Amino acid sequence: MNNSVDERLDNLLDINNEATKALVDGRIKTPVVVDHADERQVDRGVDYKYTRNTLYNLVERGQDAIEGILDLAKEGEHPRAYEVAGQLIKTVGETSEKLLQIQKQMQDLEGESGRPQNTTNQLFVGSTSELQKLLKKKNDRV
Image (spheres, rainbow, N blue to C red):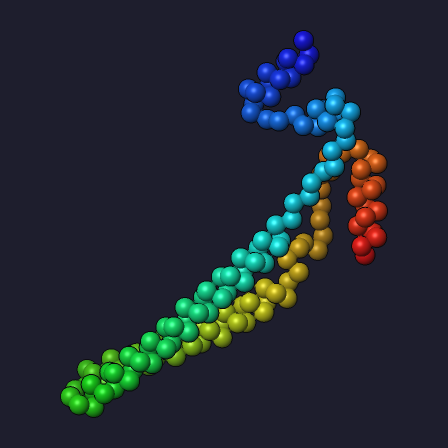
């Protein structure tokens, strides 16, 4: 009776009661610790490379456009063409500065360990022997 009530509640709440199943089967499952810090580091690297390549392409295309608009301005000697050339030069310069800014931001992010210095309110689900084994493995690595 008790088992069927648990199963009904599990189905109703759409949960999986693995902890009691592991004890019922007589097997002890070790807890799985998921660390997303590595994924964030990879994502940061990918984003940095993509942004950097995009900015490089923008600077290169801007330089080509500057050469073209300067040729046009020299041929036509129209003040508006020189104004557009000046704005384009300013935009390319700002894009180049953004390259330096993302470099600095990436260095700041890499300077962080990516993990909190102080961790509070952690929850461990398992037996005390499992916890001791886990702590012993952690101490052996250090």
